[in-house]
Image (cartoon, rainbow over all chains, first blue to last red; front, side):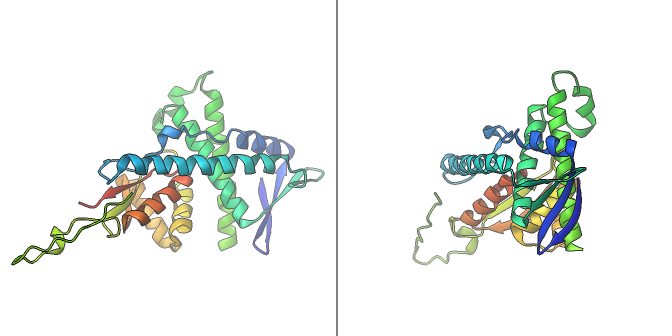
Length: 157
Length: 102
């Protein structure tokens, strides 16, 4: 996937045929972070800690449900991708790109949590037939994230 | 949600700032971001820029603090504002919490 140009703040990307399929596959994994992973405080020394924790969980659950619906619409919108000879073109507004970064990072962090939150040096020791799909999701979502972040940097420069 | 401070006047005694009970409206809560091996450095920098409207240099400074020291205190705020920022950071799946500034 590479950035073709930024016009009036909108990003136009080119994706190879396989990249388009991979992006869809990764996005379909959302949401991946287990809800119990969201903690408002480490120390727990907050007034009304339980109520505030519940508020955070409710807020994130609601937001993830909205994201899930929006993602479904995004993935089924046939006008979203324009096919070319070598693949597809994907046009994203800045807010859509920002939103996709959140989605991709949820898939990345969620996959990492499912893998047991390994330290970087330990990652490959955990790679086996059972964990391969989660490693794939973690790495693939990260690759797309990096391409989007590079695009944002190019716009700034 | 937040505690409400009830001022108590004690005759003959001057109440100092330290003695005041912390309420949800006082900037007594820290927004902390913790290190993890999964979030990319560029991503963390970007999120700090978006959530706090920081310049890249400042966002990078805090990202490096997270990376090298294990955590960075991003803001000292009232309870409501700190809560708001933690919600925002967690929407981006960063490991962020709020802690009482003791």
